[in-house]
Length: 526
Image 1 (cartoon, rainbow, N blue to C red):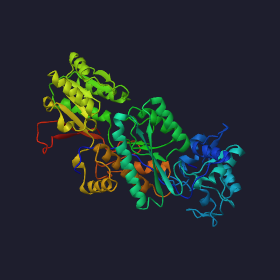
Image 2: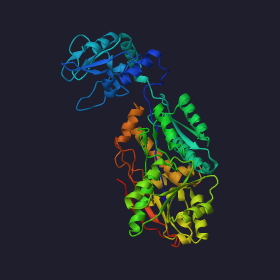
Image 3: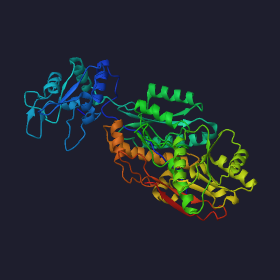
Image 4: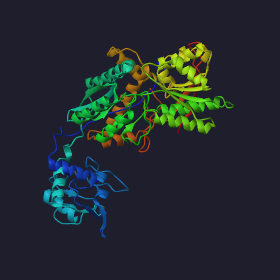
């Protein structure tokens, strides 16, 4: 049983709908049956054996778990030309019985005949069962638990789903220096889901949007996340913003099976081994750093740079460090100098003195706008102008306001630019912002969270009324060149969790007229 906005950065997240009614807590027997259904293993550790075919090939039950073929919702998943039977109780017990493709007809199942089928492979009233379906040897108590759960399978909804509501959540940073971005994301998501509710929701269900602001202290923040997930986990998270906590947050979500489809963050995790239910719209700093260094190499072919990575000490940047080191090796440059700084008291003059003294001439700066600006202004006062590489999202208005001494020496990477945006999408977004009287602050976060919500709703729509977290992931894995109207087309597969793999890179020229667009190049990371 188996627009006229400035350059944008966007990631995604989503939520979903359930089907026949609000799920109540499972009984102990039903809970044990659910574990057996999904894993093929007995909660009591009693052995379970599966037998296949006329030769009764013997395998452990874990190799033939019900949910692996029939899906977590029991409706069946086509595989290798075989379509497993729907095993929801409503289907198994329909009053007129069953007529199979081979012409065999039999009465409906009941508890007793279903046990007989599982053990002996015989349909109700006689007749050999589907040859692709294994039979099982397991304790009578496990069989009873499994049947008990199958009776509840129809309305065993994932957490955060009821007959009438879809609970969507987001986690946001409470750090004072980042509070503006958090407010922006929360405002856009609240407005978007409120608008959907005014239009009737989705498949008759209303969205319930929740946001949680996390403490700046790591252990306290993780405790808040775990407590929330234990008490009232949402169906999924949308466009979360938790700089420095990504790895730990993903671990906590993975433990509870909560999808994170989309994240807007300064320091995104791009290793998807933590949680396969993480979907991104765009590359994070890992890929942006790679694109920037490749651009620097190609633009200055004869230069051998001494590279430094300047980063906030509280960020989880192991992936970025590895990527920068790899890119330097690939270019034949020396290993990069790693220098951290306090995000609360960045001493730009000290950083300039230290890096200049080390002979650095290319700085990958992972701070936010005010920190990048302070660094360049301090360098200009010392008549020093190394090449500075940064994320355009973090650099903000520096694309127009960089010190003149850094003309074409400040390289910014963007996952998307205005040419990706279409008039109809800009009009939609503008109308939403005006209708809810939202300020146009932190444009990157505005477009990010809006595009994330659009992808989310499309994923839900494609999943249909009978939605589960499993179906949600499957619907996203079928995305191909999905057009948000604001971003490059989004594509996912079973093994690809990044919607658009690449980055635009531009060499900033602050002396150019504001009406002129700096030349950009797309660096493909496929």
